[in-house]
Image (cartoon, rainbow, N blue to C red; front, side, top):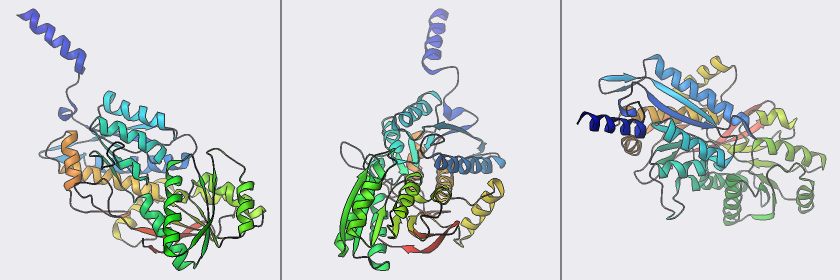
Length: 387
């Protein structure tokens, strides 16, 4: 009998490891997947700053209060280098090896989509702070909402409609050109929705040009666009490409206003573009100039810690973590299903980027957008955007 018992214990050890289930540990493990290297390292850097800030804040008070316990948060960060396969591998590692309760990230859609597939399959909550592509939260087979995947931001569809309306009604543009990375998920989605929305409003997209990730020469596309002479150019692409496109357009004498997506929001855009994006507009998730107490406090703390103004990626990451902390604190138990249910049922959460609230059958919150303009070395708030 003793031998049989010992054999069972050995089998359990081999199957489950020497640690107890995460539900009985003295810490709460949260995973984070970020673009620390690769093509958009500024995105990962901002997200990492905000994540560490949020975790340090909650741990200063001992951690998250759950019933009669206060448990500290352990943050486990993985770099996906802005690559889909690495994002999927990172999600698998965090779930199966690190045994995290939930995951924040990735930020870019190219990583968020495959990571979300892993999280949904393994029934683990994943919240992407910045990925706007609708595919992230939708089941690829049924096109219905995933049950475990959420986002802290608005979607491509909403954002592109906001930008189309701004171009047509505020900028009074009757014609527009579009230039985007055909190999990138979010830009492709935004380009298609902008074209559809702009033309439904009464405008006309007179050029719909593409390029491929890692291209550096856009002169052929820009020359075509210049010949057509549109009143505005929609450029839904990441900040590193925007700077190259804008500088080449300037050299060609293409002096048409540019309009961009939230992928422009890194301060590195201004540094890299050498003034070529001056006066251009883009949609964003929040403005650091907002006067709400939550936003003011966040901006002041972030600036004190890191010596610079937080961008929207930092703000969204911070919101994602604190929303998750609140869901964990109000969860019926410390398991993944309970946390998922808590997120869906949580009353509205007032974050840095506005109100966040999920309906029971959607991972997409109702959010607002702002229109920003590049002026000198700053992004300046112009207006709230409406779809």
